[in-house]
Image 1 (cartoon, rainbow, N blue to C red):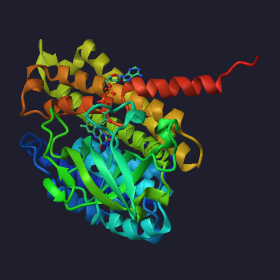
Image 2: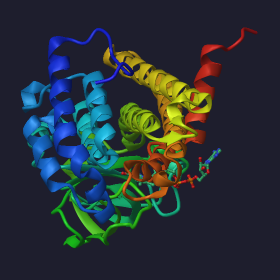
Image 3: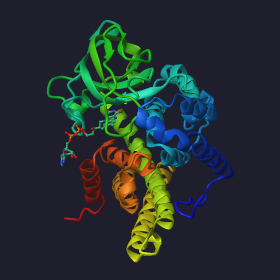
Image 4: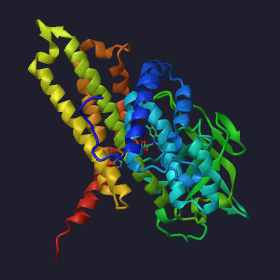
Length: 401
Ligand SMILES: Cc1cc2nc3c(=O)[nH]c(=O)nc-3n(C[C@H](O)[C@H](O)[C@H](O)COP(=O)(O)OP(=O)(O)OC[C@H]3O[C@@H](n4cnc5c(N)ncnc54)[C@H](O)[C@@H]3O)c2cc1C
């Protein structure tokens, strides 16, 4: 472990959990990540290992069989995992968001039914807001749920579900106008449905199709899919929290903790890029000395290290704020924005340090170069983060009169 990205004030338990995860990453993830990624192969063995470590239940309360850990512990584990392979952190992230939404907003019956099996990783979560025609503008959702007796009938098409194929529980955001007369603000007529399904592709239950994996430039291994609902029947007791019209707020709450998680991923990928760059710079010689001895390369390393350190500090701050029970949307937005931008820059610098070899698939930096851009988009683009940050700053610094 290097000097960068240390976290002061961790408990013995937190340190022990992190050391275990770091060891797992070094031994079980890094040696196989690039090969699996090039084959776009699902990392089944790694996922089984993480289940055994209890990572799927890290933040689920102990009364439901989880470890009851804080957002900070979780984010630091995600940082370690993303340092090994970002796709693996993606496998955990949607599961974590759905478990968090259940913990915060689920009825007692929903919590008792889902959370113990989510803690072991037996039930695996995905969440679905985006549609082919919208991502940033969640209020424009067109998928619809209509009540018929004790059920809702769902129709619509969803897009970009991380873990859409491998999950067995999907939290899906739909419009439900029932009880909300025409003219109701769009975000007050949305509902989260908890849809149970079999893993796999094709028609996974009557009215529900997961067409297949979307072919992506990076972030491979983890499946990203569409989801098509065509007369899908969902029992009324599978409305998250039991009440319609709250879906938008529930999802935004989930995405807010997800943003800390994406920031942590950016930190992990940037750390790995720094490690690769600083090692290569000492091995490669030009003009009679290691390239690390050229000031231009040292300046790059200095900038990279500073960005790794700054992003880590902001991510930790955002997680700690949430753990202390305070509102953290400003800090989470800033951390997500900064960590993802810095990640892209640090990866690019490490790529440049590798010269022509960075372009070869034999070198890990090639994979990181294709992974980093996803962080600029997922859980809200940079522009959306800046909108949130700007609005909140104006709230905080409103002038009198
Ligand atoms: C690999 C991957 C995995 C994903 N996983 C999930 C998932 O699990 N669940 C899920 O629901 N979604 C998921 N998404 C979707 C993701 O959240 C959206 O792609 C993202 O929110 C952006 O939406 P969009 O692609 O529709 O872009 P758009 O919203 O169409 O935006 C296009 C561009 O316009 C900019 N823009 C939009 N509105 C404004 C504005 N008001 N002001 C200034 N600029 C603006 C955006 O920043 C962007 O640059 C995933 C996406 C990817 C690529």
